[in-house]
Length: 241
Image (cartoon, rainbow, N blue to C red):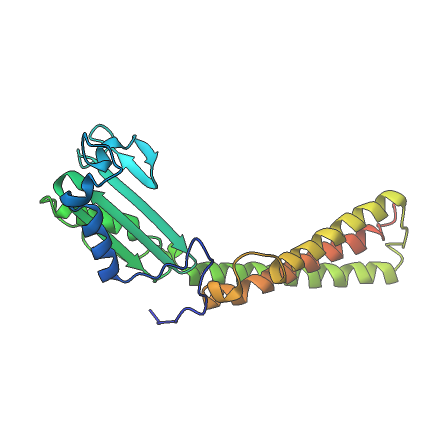
């Protein structure tokens, strides 16, 4: 694992709250404090968590004793941004809570937090295990680059063959109205692929793991090249034998 500091601050309103493990501990302690459970403005007939509906309520995923594997009321909220993963899991009736913050790229905060919470009630912790390959950004980056290389090699091979066929008269330049329309659609798709890869709103390159940020544009360009080649060869069909 190589430490790579984030160059992305986040979006206003959703990911600009930066919390440490100590911050999350203070937050959980505060919301589980019996003195605050029935604060002014909350119902007087029980703590706030007793008023939640099973499913999703007040920003928490709520599992009651009938649906929870821990056989108790469990509240959970998870979140992720590229390269980061966080989870908070609470058992409010026994004043227990766990927060897990990860920046390893793998989405494992939820399972780890749930396992730690179960351990506070006597359950054994699961043995440590490595993240699966598909949970690691570098795996996806390698897959993107392999796909891009395959597309580019295919484009080169098909382009060379089509050019030879034109020289030998096996193909002829015959732009018909349907062919032009088809070529225009393919060219538009190619342009939109490039636009989305480089200009569209979404995660900026700084928000992505470095390997993924480098591999995605290469894949977009190779896919666009394939679309442009398909548009061009469609305007020069093979001669009927």
